[in-house]
Length: 93
Image (cartoon, rainbow, N blue to C red; front, side):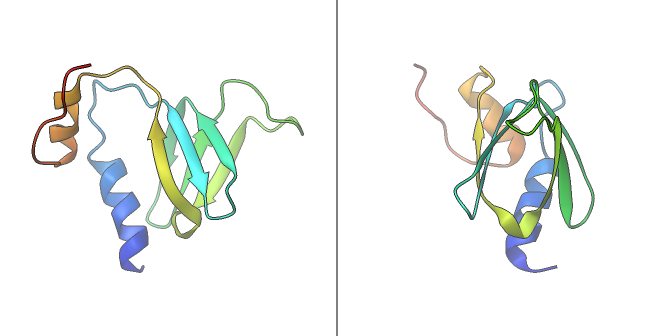
């Protein structure tokens, strides 16, 4: 496993238990995959979609190496990111 894959694995392992698993995966091919839940192993994740995509898929299996970034769509308090291991504080909006 390379260090980039390890970054996503470590982030998912630290996902706060009280934080909804809602967001959007952005892939290296600029595809956006919204999700409302996920599971993972050492090299990939399975995301659950709330509604099917254009071809009817409700789940997607995504290798960590294909993830460019993850957007969080759940409404959460800024301090929740400290539970991920981030330092500092975000402004309250």
